[in-house]
Image (tube, rainbow, N blue to C red):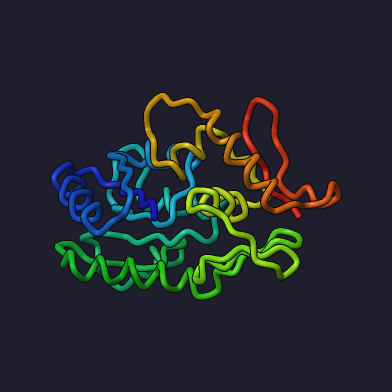
Length: 220
């Protein structure tokens, strides 16, 4: 799971990043609201930890901006603001949760797990005749199970999760492969060819199309 931390205090970022990476999460961070917004436009995060008082764009403004295009990613405010009115304001802006600073790291981890658990409760995704059951880690085509490798499963799930959006090769290599340096993205095409062969779809079932020179898009 990929978590974005938007926080202007370097010490808190370091503390959260170290702790959450030890819990097995992939972490990206930004120290101001504008950078945080730019990252949300480039990457698909599974959860966002958001400070309220940020340079350039406040956390509240950032939350509202994210919600204009993204209605599902959980957003948790980490903030010293704790009046009832401020809490309501944050929730109205689109936040899912609210943790007051200073906070218990153990509590934060449990809150994160709850949000991921809630996301996965109905995480059976479909793309035409393809069904992906993330709990059982199964892919079915016309109710017949197809055996994919772990990386193939992750790539297919990523494209279906972002159905209707063009996923660039750079986004895929960073979000699925977790590689944040120059890398030959041609490896993605190799995996896509393998996935298509295993799914064995007919021409009229070409649910995942190549966007030449850019990446891929999944559509029913």
